[in-house]
Length: 305
Ligand code: SF4
Ligand code: SF4
Image 1 (cartoon, helix red, strand yellow):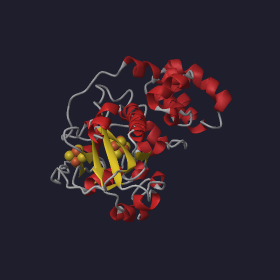
Image 2 (spheres, rainbow, N blue to C red):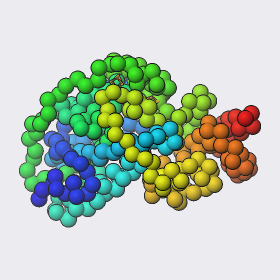
Image 3 (cartoon, protein in one colour):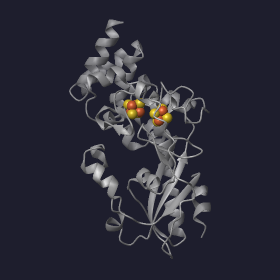
Image 4 (cartoon, protein in one colour):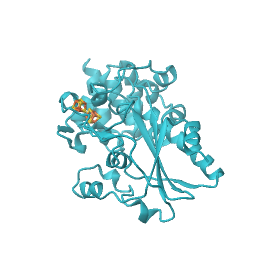
């Protein structure tokens, strides 16, 4: 069985088969409160959680950013495609008699620890030739033989601490690898009300790509936003209630009203979309309490214009 061929067939560019080991540094950082609380379920000692496994498979799904990242950020549509690629890969691994299960472990930390990628000040991992434009998906495997791994690449410092990402950030990037997750807008996609200053700052639907697009180390190739994404994820289209169309593009979790709709309310206002007002008033009647902060912000902003 050729794992490389299987993962490429599923849609990944490459993958790494690593030994199962605890990630003690990462655990220490998590205990120190460095990471977002949603890292709590991640298995930092995969050997304890998956005792049957003798290898960790981490697959790389690169993507090309959009020409205009201020409308819709390209990361989440790519991460949804990557999720489905892993689903396909798990099926074929199982068909090839390899027990394989999707695993939530700190993949970026694993690749950095093996010298495969380099940590950057924007808290992302840099991997040649994709820069930071990729999504990682991982699985635990029971292979016929345990793996012994020799890193094929030499660990190196890539981030030169130029400070550009810190300049364009909402306040999360502190420089010299320090990061305050409470000030990264991706934190506000968990379904809680978005803080007022973050609403004023929110640059695009589905989070933010600023620290990636500004980074001089990243590739500069871009693609136009696919029409389907542009039309479906237009904030007014989202306000009109197109969840069913959004789900195949970004996944069920992200398309949930508490995430997508909440952001669309804010983005419609930030873009001066007066055609949103009618829908915002309607939402006030049906979901007024749930989205109170965002609706108050959006309606008052649009009525000022
Ligand atoms: S923009 Fe500069 S400081 Fe930020 S990650 Fe890129 S190289 Fe590092
Ligand atoms: S995604 Fe946006 S808010 Fe988060 S670290 Fe990057 S620039 Fe800052």
